Amino acid sequence: MSSPKKSEHYVNNKDFLAALIDYRSDVELTFFKLHGREPTKEERAKRWETKPVIPTYIGQCFLKIANHLSYKPNFVNYMFKDDMICDGIENCVRYIHNFNPEKSKNPFAYFTQIIYYAFLRRITQEKKQLEIKNKILERTDFDEVFDANDLDASNYSEYNSIKDNVHSKLRN
Image (cartoon, rainbow, N blue to C red):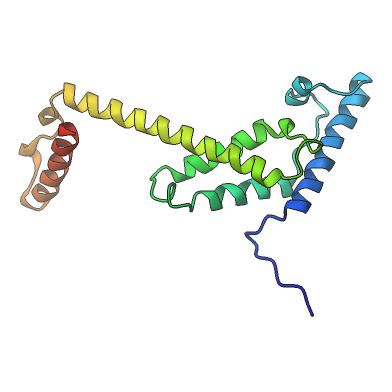
């Protein structure tokens, strides 16, 4: 029997782990050539001229994990979903050096957690920004922002719906 066809959205944990181990050994090898010793955890995080670039496969895995985590019901309806995905990938790249294959053989879970908490941080940032916008509207007397004299009859209903939304948000 032939093996089942793997989905393009599937991240194979074994291949992902092997790629991370290869990348980590490349980082250690280039650091050893440059400094004559193995890097510490802090030194792995720093940049140096000959530090290898993260392989495309690892980047694709980060992207797949972030994209599919964004489809979970608790993340699906946000307008800033692309920003959440970008933050998750950025955090994975930033903390790739912290993954230790000697401690864990599950990079999928490790990077999923990094992306999950990046999503939560982005949501709290956006909520703070929304609160600031609402306070600004409240303090500047939103009637100045919405000038009804410039509206014609076709835009008047849209104006009223926006104004009603602002009123309801200010009451809550």
